[in-house]
Length: 152
Image 1 (cartoon, helix red, strand yellow):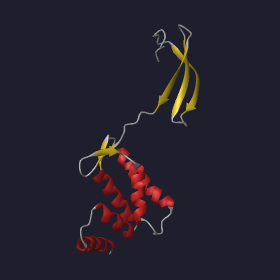
Image 2 (cartoon, rainbow, N blue to C red; image 1 turned 45 degrees about the vertical axis):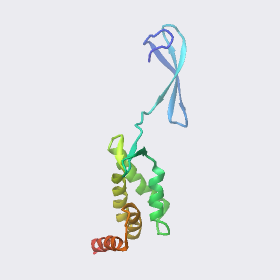
Image 3 (cartoon, rainbow, N blue to C red; image 1 turned 180 degrees about the horizontal axis):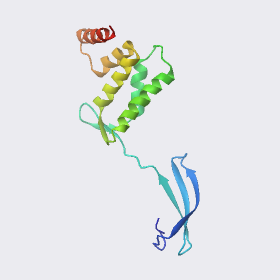
Image 4 (tube, one colour; image 1 turned 30 degrees about the vertical axis):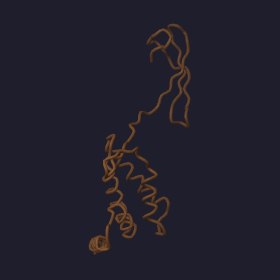
């Protein structure tokens, strides 16, 4: 780290401590040439993840939206909060493992549907009916038939 006063590369850390609720490290440094002290902060570099919506617009990734969708699908179903959080964590891990700055909402939606299909048919159909925007009862019935056929 260069000294902001004399520009020397010859600096040393004399104190380190957590900062910003452990999201950063505060380092107190001293220049060994001019003996002046200064503070630096070290943070993990994150790429803001953007979601590409169906209409082509982009918005910042928001985990709460995934949680809300899963909670609505699982409303009054026999699942613990831990089970729901586990599935949301799995989806979020898959999204971040792509290591891309933009992810289509369709990718997230399909991941969620796969997780819910493994979890329970009712939760899956609830989510699918909203996600796939079922326009009529026949579309809904066809999706139910697929679920029933796959359970046999």
